[in-house]
Amino acid sequence: MSFPVILEHSDARAEVQGREIKIPTISATAVILASRGADQLIVPCPSKYELERTEAGLKLLPKERRSCVTIVDKNGAVLNSVREYLEPLVAQAREWPEDAFVGFAEEFLYLLALGAKHRSGILATSVEVLRGFVPIIRPNHFKGEGRFRLAELVALTCSYEPHSLEHGSFQLETPSGDDFSPAVWSLLDSAQFRDVVSASGRLGYLKHPRVGLKRLQGIIRNFFGRRGTKEMLSLAATTADLAGAGTAAKAAEHFFESLGAHTDSFRPPFLSLGPAELGIYRAALADTHPNAIPPPGTIMVFECSRAGKVGHSWLSVGEEKKLEREAAQPKRLKERFLKAKAAQMRFAP
Image 1: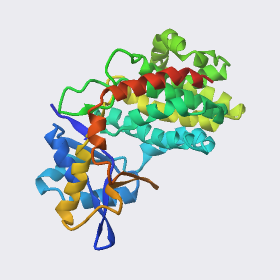
Image 2: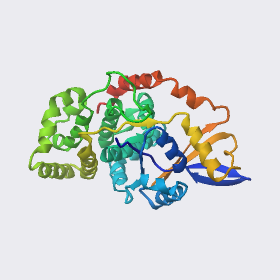
Image 3: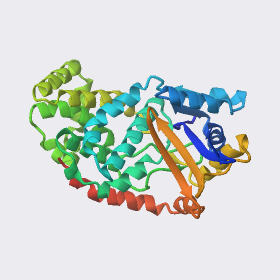
Image 4: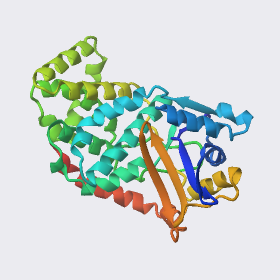
């Protein structure tokens, strides 16, 4: 059975005789993923920079293995849809922790959309990170459309239930148990449907999302299966235009329309490599610059980029066992999930 995994490009940052260098990690990561059952790597390259760095990394792979890597979203269309959807949140998230939450939300939605489209696992910790922010976010920092999208995003984060992983050997980025809502993809449908109900003034459904989902799940699915639905959505968007919310409504419609086309039959699992991340860093250095050392005060530093946005993750000296401790505490995922779930009702618009 084929088991593809989506991963974003990253570089290992290091120093050689005081000179800073960056080494693509795709070759070292590919070896680890292959050892855990992945047979296809999918790398999004929404800008020229990611494409150049990924192609540089491919040269480090054996020729026989380069065909196992597929580059997607070269024109950035999926990422642009995600960023359009998040615009009201980005405009209003001016302080920590709200700005950090919105930043990680971009990664979550982007990789979720690609994972659903390509029916693949996702090498990222987005779900756990977002759940950790939910209890400390201040909903009153968001107004209007931003408040509604925050509620949608929190509901999706707290209720997301991936398909179970039946291939490979990974730590799943989800708590176990029966605490997840099976109606998570109905939430996506209702997010699309919001343009119609908001135009008619029926915002009460969004104030009680759990009740609303149970009532509307079947209705919404039937609604989107009807002929003429697109015309009705266009009419709703036009009505929203008259109310001054047209641009935001169309952005939401476009994103959830593209995501919803793939989500009915597959919900991508988020995967974690745990302590293997340190091994990937060291292998990347050893394969190309055996004399390279981590930047001062660190034992590893990764640099990631996504169409103009650059981020770093690292471990400081003395944190050698941190990844192992986290991987050995599966209860931590469950506790974080329960805390986020308990805080969810604070986000009702």
